[in-house]
Length: 119
Image (spheres, rainbow, N blue to C red):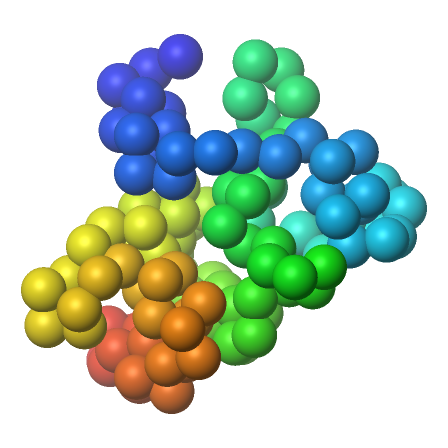
């Protein structure tokens, strides 16, 4: 594991395997892979296994506003690691990390900031 992975792990905290994410969303692991391919979720390899941040799933569903935000970040040229770091890095002006704002249903401001970074 390189230093960037450790930094991302520190920011993200808890990870879910594809199997765990599939169970939480009541879909197949292949569907989770499709969500990742469609930028509805982000997945990275941890200890050889594809995982997603546990914070991306809440109440049996993908956090509201997450897919749109991930698409904006992807379209802006963010790598998976850069998008994860941005999503989980606290911002005093937000306040909290963008993922926290999405969980709290403050997605409009998060997407506005993501779009502004693309300019």
